[in-house]
Length: 273
Ligand code: ADP
Figure 1: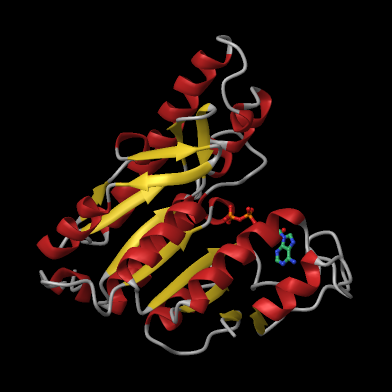
Figure 2 (figure 1 turned 120 degrees about the vertical axis):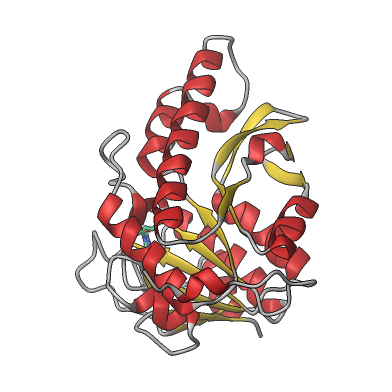
């Protein structure tokens, strides 16, 4: 196999590096407990390797995390000791998913190393407070591909919290100022409304913080769900520090590779103002 990814060089700095988010909606079927999309993940791993770019990878938990976490209200923090077996189970499940992702990356000849957030992060009232970014920097410098994921993390106020892959990306982007952050979702980008429930939803090719402010004032002419709003404010914050942010459809062949190579695949560009 001749993957350009084989030749990822050790480097003394993180300049030129990119962050790729493999959304939980892409690598799992979100409505079926522990349903892994192996073929999709394999293709995406191949696209990353073929691009030859240096990356850090953050993946979502999808149906390995959200279903049980919601059932046991883990996002609300510690409320009863009955939650603890569920917490342990969710942590097992997301590690299991992570190993499946790591295997696909390794099969594409990417030297992927897993960095579980529970072992190197703390939260405060649901917000990521500290993350041992040296781990990421040092593995990148060794020439490895750091891989992390949405996880259950200790919280100094709530006991524990769900730490989303998006929160980790925000901190990594602040620390490393990557060239580009690419979010792979299961839809073509950011729409004027959820494209799965609104047939009239239109794909936005460009979104900025002005648009977001309109949303938060509640005077918006568009309807973006709360979840997507949270994701977008994260993205805008990253873009405002000068990093290119793209949202693309990871289920469509070739789009991730094109985005990694600086081409303009169908998708949404999130820009700072
Ligand atoms: P991931 O797990 O991949 O990070 P989510 O499943 O949390 O992402 O969010 C992606 C989903 O958000 C899409 O599948 C889509 O149905 C939904 N969604 C809601 N509103 C929008 C919107 N305005 N634009 C795009 N997707 C949206």
